[in-house]
Image (cartoon, rainbow, N blue to C red; front, top):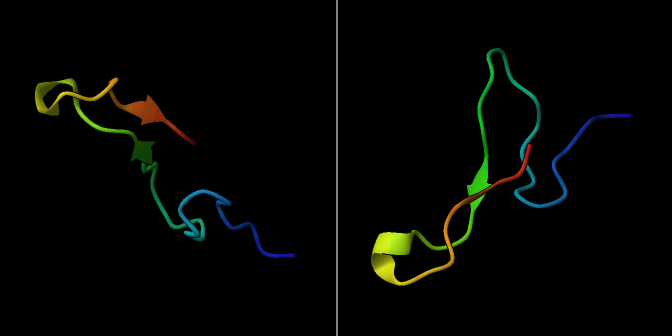
Length: 36
């Protein structure tokens, strides 16, 4: 069974990539949340 991120739909690749969601505080959001 392949591992796919249920938030961004990405498959694992070589290296450590950090997926973030949310709106940046500079743009009036609540800040970036790390998801994986």
